[in-house]
Image (cartoon, rainbow over all chains, first blue to last red; front, side):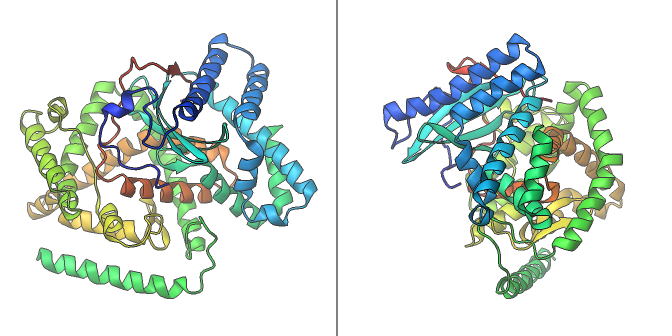
Length: 192
Length: 262
């Protein structure tokens, strides 16, 4: 990700939506607002102390609304997407989404008081990169970059590690051993 | 003496690079995939490391994280960081970052004295934040290749994920480390083992959350770690010169509390 360029001025990070040199104000605000909005929704959810089922339902909604799941699914399947039958693609996307919801739901199960700060937005049409940091109660902040295209999230990079690229490697290795149907079955098992 | 070491390492790098380009001719690497010609032995070592981790390192790291007072953990980390400053300074100089190398040396002098053998990071309070550069990163900065390409991926016994570039880097950092040279000279090698042990537990205690998450949410743990390691190292090489992990002011607008399982 060459977009994650050197940041010389620390002050710039502190501004809520410090616009990058190419940032259109409205668009940049939108991407930053999208991320803050999700963070606030998730926080409200955690504060409400809902049941596992309810949390999962709410997270599934957030995922569908704010993430371009079909695009992410296509990306993480890589070259296998092209050889998959329409039926396999459909089953894969459904299973992938369910497994991701389950994973997020488990992650948010124990709330330990972390907070998210949204930083600068860099526009590099059609992408917008939103810098953010997770602040832990004690310890180093965790650096995040959200990649937004057309108002929907397509990737999250955590400390330089893209979730989409990691997932693609992960799925590719599994498919080589167990085939696409094997992967779909495993994801269905995890999401169920 | 040093020159001989360095030229030896340079030879080793050239040999590795040559072997690399020879084998690369027949590799059919998919775009974005890590080049892993030794996957079978790597997977074996990965499994071996994982077993050792499960039974020894991980329990120690969990105990350390949960039962040691935060102040002690911070002090320990500061001491380890301080012992690493000379090697970082050498690498910063080698990367052409003279100012940062000087700052790192200043940090080392301040923290070793006023900071009582590095227990307290006094230098940070006066505007000299901690930085970390290793020789793997230095090769990455020198190399014409994109930082995702560190040569063949390797899993080192006990050490874990690496690649040709970073393995050579580890060796060079080990060779130039003045504390290793001194401990060796005065015949107190046990100090080095103690330091390595503490560093392993401290380092592992900080990757517990991330690695647990990757293991739980991947279908092929080995491949997920291989990809994450390669990307992380590439980001570190690209971010050269960026002051590490500067926290945003906590009262920023747009702050939202956010949960992550511990």
